[in-house]
Image (tube, rainbow, N blue to C red):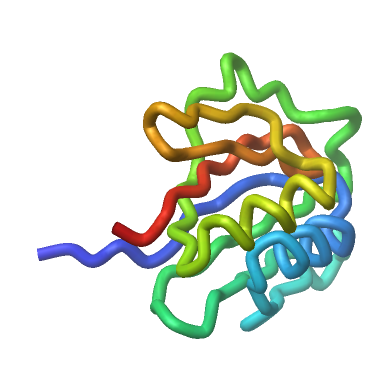
Length: 121
């Protein structure tokens, strides 16, 4: 038996990403690990309702943006109030793809990762 614990994405600006995921999804910092030599910072974010965590990793020596390929991998966030979430994300200017037929949309984070938003069904 296995239980999902967390997913990781690498980011170029840890504080900007923490702020983004806080504003976009209400995620809060749960814990942080800073390498003694300053070579990396890992921050776990949580929604306060589930045990699943989003791990953000910043690497000091990483230069330039990450190559996300076709950007087909994503996380999915289920919204209690889908319409309010959509309005917030539209206001933030981060909606990058909409599929009204399927009743979902995607947002893009500061590093170019797409994240899906679906209504609670």
